[in-house]
Image (cartoon, rainbow, N blue to C red; front, side, top):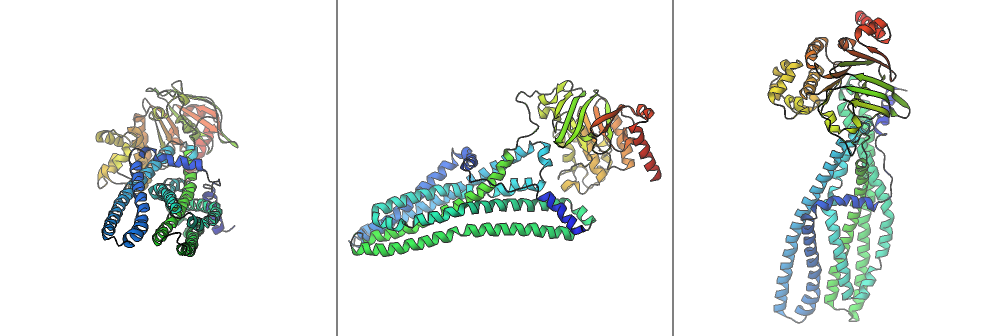
Length: 606
């Protein structure tokens, strides 16, 4: 397999496994659920919009009668000038009322639609924030982004115009049909005979259009996933000179997105010409049969003119209702994907009787803990251990031995498959997540720095900290010096992901952030792996003071960083094979001894 093909396969495996088309029949219950977001607006905006719809509809139904029956058949035929002037004035006033009502309707509907979109996006984002780590393990950032942005944006037209307009058009159709039938039942039946044909043809398009919009959403998600990954991984792409392969893969994904839009748009576009053809046939029937009825004096010229006005108005709401139906199909495709996320339940969730964790001493116990990420791989096997309050414990072992898994279970990012994790004799599954995690700080190897200033990043875990407290934390980890050397000191903008900072500087900020939060338990997961030796010595000196009185768990491949740990736990394939302090384990000459010896030899030969 050549390099180009290998790169393409890697990209395909990642992007195409994260977001599949959800194939379900049209679900009206789901649409009712979607429209439930209108409830907060039923007190003011929705009733006012509906009132304007009723006013506009009533005016539109009255005007053709005034023009045809009263103006032509009465004022003009009878040469009644006073009545003619009065009718002209009334019609002008009615048009003014309709104009004003339309302005208010559009203004209020825009406010209503934007409010609903805001509420849905807020609900989805809040829900995603509370989902478990496993949810994010299984989905790309781009896939999540497209649900919160694109899928919700696609509902905007439905809520801004579709909901109330469909009510207006429905009332208008009912009113028009009622008036037409009262004017001439026979002419009404003759004109409406073509409606079943249009209904049959349009119904046959529904499934195809719905499926097309589902595919569009799926292709958009894949495109966003690729864009997100490409931007985040641009340094790796350029380092391995994979720009050409990446561009070619993007062209493929972009072309698929283009084709899905083209196909969906073509199917969408079929509805309006169908209405136009129906309109043309209805007009032909009106002229032919209407002329016949006039000759027989069954209807007057004025009635025929009013009929023509109403018939012209009749096809307009039908066309708009077709567009609303297309919006519903698009909304169905998007809402399926939105509700798929909203229906996700956190694997780690609080009990209904969750207790607040009081200030802890920091004693940690694992009792016969078994954990599996999936059914095929057991990460921890019957782990039992105790870390005393205020003790520094180190977890060592080869990659995949279960070190990070233990740290994740303490923070309750995952729950054990069996067994218990206790802090100060509290089963952490009985505690509220907020009260638990507020007393734990985690520093990772791949630290995340948010856009904003340095002081905002350090203060992230404790927003109420003063500037002086931030500086004390920065000084304690040795970050104060490099921060002061920056142009704006603590108020320097670090840009996205802290791009203006070196890897070591970002790590120092993450130390300051964790320590400012003043946790009772501090977890350092390969936290010094990206720091040079000089900086590491500086941090080790600071940690000796800062870890005093706190329970600390240090995960490190660089064994020189854990020599002073009071307890070293050696893991292998999810099992504890050794434990003790550095001297004790060196005397045993077991796995830990071999690891230290191997690193020493590597450093000496390196």
